View 1 (cartoon, helix red, strand yellow):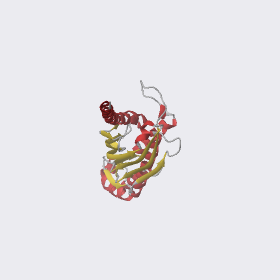
View 2 (view 1 turned 90 degrees about the vertical axis):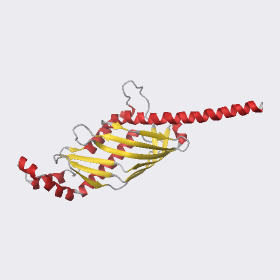
View 3 (view 1 turned 180 degrees about the vertical axis):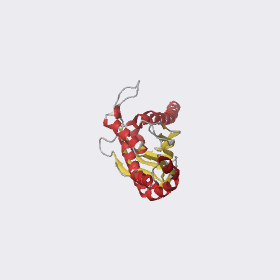
View 4 (view 1 turned 60 degrees about the vertical axis):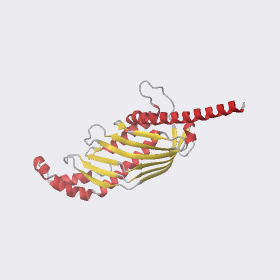
Length: 257
């Protein structure tokens, strides 16, 4: 009898281990699929991720190769590119009403600020997310999907560090100027009983990114206009505009609309 119970116990342990492994594999693919399905609906741009790895045992995970494209009409290849991001979560919350994430750290993302006299790409993406959340889009299903309540989350700590910003001015031949962005640190997001949705978290983070990008670009206007003076000599001749007028317009791009 003891031998039978021992075998049954060993069998249950093996099944549990296999179940955890299978769930981990399922979560990896589910998160990747969710990002690439839900992301474009929020931002109205392409969203892709190379790899997702999550561990149910440790609660740790990594996301590699995340990219967010630009809205229609912008020329640069993408708005945001993240080589690697790490997260740690509370494993038990995976089965609860609210997913609790202890920390998300985005490492050395590359952000492109493409500006024109009609606005900039980051602000346009943010406007798309605002429209999505404002219209109740957090619960909006894709074609063929059943409508259901949006999953609530809590993020205790969100950090973006070592970000690189490329400033690209429309009409200046595709040239870009690198600008340093200070670290972006958010905390206690969705800590109340209601939590927040993924769309609301995206909205909050994009607002911070767009704000920091505008501030960094604005601080570098003097350098940008110096470069613009050299870059737009031929442009000024062909359009009949003076270089001083063109460079003044470059500074105006970064004024908050």
